[in-house]
Image (cartoon, rainbow, N blue to C red; front, side):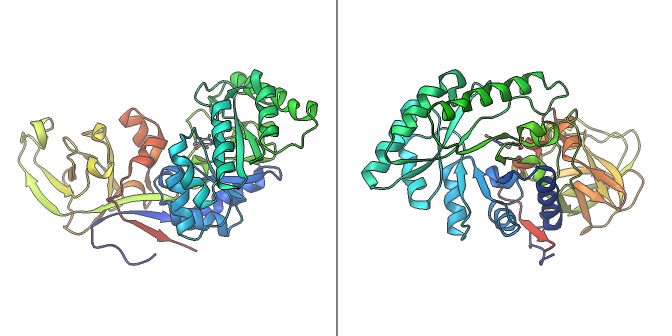
Length: 374
Ligand SMILES: *Cc1c(COP(=O)(O)O)cnc(C)c1O
């Protein structure tokens, strides 16, 4: 691991775990290409170092949500194909052209605008056609795919690099709706044969489908959360063994003895019936450690579980270490493991009433990332 930052708060990212997860997913994906999803700062793990690792380890392509993420990767020297998922407005096109990013065409108008902009530049834009098979977010309804594909074939400045869709519920125990989405997607793909057009890369599998629907692997899979060692939901099958890669840590900055019955933090919403030791950590919701975790979440110190005492502040929080001792400067673990104890993103998500994705992506820019491993 590199030198620790001066700020006594950091997210430790285990590159070995990320590498293991990519290999495990590749081995389970039946020869399909891997498009590693690195949107939202690589799910909080740090966009550039994570993308560079996945590229070095042989990921065939990367996916981001917004063009600026792709531009940051190109500036860092990432050469792999990068797909910008999601709908685009013309004002965003220059970033894609200037950085050699692949477009998502999400409607006939969007495809026409991409074609016109590419014509103006005298280039061919790599485009993935986005079909909607049930998510109702963006994309052309699968029943209208025939006309959309015909339109794409007529576009002189578009290179059809792929065709894709997205599952709404591939991480649930009941896979009926996901299976129906896959059927609709496959039916829509028959238009390529009907039009005697070559099939571009077909892809639909997110992490849930990678784990539960091998028939959805097609030409390429698009895992996100699973690469980071986290399962997409509690009910999703854990058919691939992955390891969490992120630990969130903060050093104790203040320790005091608290008399019984003393109200603690904003609003005085927490107090102890006994005298306790209270440790202060310099991390708060301004770092993405959610306020909803106030008086609920566990914190690890010296390999033992304690609890957040009172409201999480913007920049600090308090830990009830009960009758135990702790010293200023010791490192606490808010997410990840310490000895035999572990706090998972899923556990924090449950306590905060959200999902592990949000726990990870919330970890803010103010938290330095420290990389450990290969
Ligand atoms: C975020 C995203 C993914 C990855 O989803 P996970 O559930 O994290 O695997 C795949 N495809 C699209 C279109 C996405 O937006």
